[in-house]
Length: 138
Image (tube, rainbow, N blue to C red; front, side, top):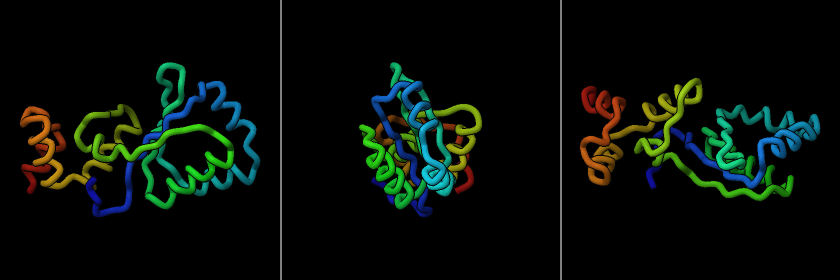
Protein backbone atom coordinates (compact mmCIF):
# COMPACT_ATOMS: atom_id res chain seq x y z
CA UNK A 1 0.00 0.00 0.00
CA UNK A 2 1.21 3.47 -0.82
CA UNK A 3 1.18 6.32 1.63
CA UNK A 4 0.35 9.47 -0.22
CA UNK A 5 1.78 12.93 0.34
CA UNK A 6 -1.55 14.36 1.40
CA UNK A 7 -3.93 12.67 3.74
CA UNK A 8 -6.86 11.93 1.43
CA UNK A 9 -7.86 8.40 0.51
CA UNK A 10 -10.79 6.84 -1.30
CA UNK A 11 -12.86 4.30 0.57
CA UNK A 12 -15.56 1.98 -0.66
CA UNK A 13 -18.31 1.00 1.77
CA UNK A 14 -20.54 -1.92 0.76
CA UNK A 15 -23.78 -2.41 2.62
CA UNK A 16 -26.60 -4.91 2.41
CA UNK A 17 -29.08 -2.03 2.25
CA UNK A 18 -31.33 -1.35 -0.70
CA UNK A 19 -31.70 2.23 -1.87
CA UNK A 20 -35.09 2.45 -0.14
CA UNK A 21 -33.70 1.14 3.16
CA UNK A 22 -30.80 3.56 2.95
CA UNK A 23 -33.14 6.49 2.30
CA UNK A 24 -35.36 5.44 5.22
CA UNK A 25 -32.39 5.38 7.60
CA UNK A 26 -31.31 8.82 6.37
CA UNK A 27 -34.84 10.19 6.82
CA UNK A 28 -34.86 8.93 10.42
CA UNK A 29 -31.60 10.60 11.45
CA UNK A 30 -31.80 12.98 14.37
CA UNK A 31 -30.80 16.63 13.91
CA UNK A 32 -27.68 15.87 15.98
CA UNK A 33 -26.74 12.97 13.67
CA UNK A 34 -27.30 15.14 10.61
CA UNK A 35 -25.02 17.85 12.05
CA UNK A 36 -22.41 15.18 12.80
CA UNK A 37 -22.45 13.85 9.24
CA UNK A 38 -22.46 17.35 7.74
CA UNK A 39 -19.42 18.27 9.84
CA UNK A 40 -17.34 15.71 7.94
CA UNK A 41 -17.65 17.70 4.68
CA UNK A 42 -17.44 14.50 2.65
CA UNK A 43 -16.94 14.04 -1.05
CA UNK A 44 -19.07 10.98 -1.71
CA UNK A 45 -20.85 9.05 -4.43
CA UNK A 46 -23.56 6.50 -3.69
CA UNK A 47 -24.41 3.90 -6.31
CA UNK A 48 -26.75 0.94 -6.41
CA UNK A 49 -25.31 -2.38 -7.58
CA UNK A 50 -27.47 -5.52 -7.58
CA UNK A 51 -30.03 -3.69 -5.41
CA UNK A 52 -27.41 -2.93 -2.73
CA UNK A 53 -25.92 0.46 -1.92
CA UNK A 54 -22.22 1.17 -2.28
CA UNK A 55 -20.64 4.45 -1.20
CA UNK A 56 -17.33 5.82 -2.42
CA UNK A 57 -15.92 8.44 -0.08
CA UNK A 58 -12.90 10.72 -0.47
CA UNK A 59 -11.68 11.60 2.99
CA UNK A 60 -8.84 11.30 5.48
CA UNK A 61 -8.20 8.36 7.80
CA UNK A 62 -9.55 9.98 10.95
CA UNK A 63 -12.84 10.90 9.28
CA UNK A 64 -13.40 7.42 7.86
CA UNK A 65 -12.95 6.02 11.37
CA UNK A 66 -15.67 8.38 12.63
CA UNK A 67 -17.95 7.37 9.75
CA UNK A 68 -17.43 3.68 10.46
CA UNK A 69 -18.16 4.23 14.15
CA UNK A 70 -21.33 6.08 13.16
CA UNK A 71 -22.44 3.15 10.98
CA UNK A 72 -21.75 0.72 13.83
CA UNK A 73 -23.78 2.85 16.25
CA UNK A 74 -26.66 2.57 13.78
CA UNK A 75 -26.18 -1.25 13.79
CA UNK A 76 -25.59 -1.33 10.06
CA UNK A 77 -23.73 -4.19 8.45
CA UNK A 78 -21.06 -3.09 6.04
CA UNK A 79 -17.69 -3.91 4.57
CA UNK A 80 -15.20 -1.18 3.79
CA UNK A 81 -11.90 -1.00 1.98
CA UNK A 82 -9.36 1.56 0.88
CA UNK A 83 -9.61 1.65 -2.93
CA UNK A 84 -7.15 4.50 -3.47
CA UNK A 85 -4.70 2.27 -5.34
CA UNK A 86 -7.48 0.86 -7.53
CA UNK A 87 -8.47 4.41 -8.44
CA UNK A 88 -4.87 5.36 -9.23
CA UNK A 89 -4.50 2.24 -11.38
CA UNK A 90 -7.73 3.06 -13.25
CA UNK A 91 -9.58 -0.07 -12.11
CA UNK A 92 -12.57 2.05 -11.06
CA UNK A 93 -13.66 5.21 -12.83
CA UNK A 94 -16.42 7.76 -12.35
CA UNK A 95 -18.17 10.32 -14.53
CA UNK A 96 -19.65 13.66 -13.70
CA UNK A 97 -18.87 15.86 -10.73
CA UNK A 98 -17.51 12.99 -8.63
CA UNK A 99 -15.32 11.95 -11.56
CA UNK A 100 -13.80 15.44 -11.57
CA UNK A 101 -13.05 15.10 -7.83
CA UNK A 102 -11.40 11.74 -8.57
CA UNK A 103 -9.21 13.38 -11.23
CA UNK A 104 -8.06 15.93 -8.65
CA UNK A 105 -7.33 13.08 -6.22
CA UNK A 106 -5.29 11.29 -8.88
CA UNK A 107 -3.35 14.43 -9.81
CA UNK A 108 -2.56 15.06 -6.13
CA UNK A 109 -1.44 11.48 -5.48
CA UNK A 110 0.13 10.32 -8.70
CA UNK A 111 3.86 9.67 -8.59
CA UNK A 112 6.42 7.86 -10.70
CA UNK A 113 6.30 4.75 -8.48
CA UNK A 114 2.52 4.43 -9.05
CA UNK A 115 3.00 4.67 -12.80
CA UNK A 116 5.88 2.18 -12.89
CA UNK A 117 3.86 -0.27 -10.78
CA UNK A 118 0.92 0.15 -13.14
CA UNK A 119 3.12 -0.56 -16.17
CA UNK A 120 4.65 -3.56 -14.42
CA UNK A 121 1.25 -5.04 -13.49
CA UNK A 122 -0.85 -4.11 -16.51
CA UNK A 123 1.49 -3.06 -19.33
CA UNK A 124 2.32 0.22 -21.02
CA UNK A 125 -1.09 0.35 -22.74
CA UNK A 126 -2.78 0.65 -19.36
CA UNK A 127 -1.55 4.22 -18.89
CA UNK A 128 -4.31 6.79 -18.69
CA UNK A 129 -4.27 10.29 -20.13
CA UNK A 130 -3.43 11.60 -16.63
CA UNK A 131 -0.53 9.13 -16.33
CA UNK A 132 0.86 10.26 -19.65
CA UNK A 133 0.47 13.93 -18.74
CA UNK A 134 2.32 13.29 -15.49
CA UNK A 135 5.19 11.58 -17.34
CA UNK A 136 5.45 14.50 -19.79
CA UNK A 137 5.61 17.04 -16.96
CA UNK A 138 8.12 15.13 -14.87
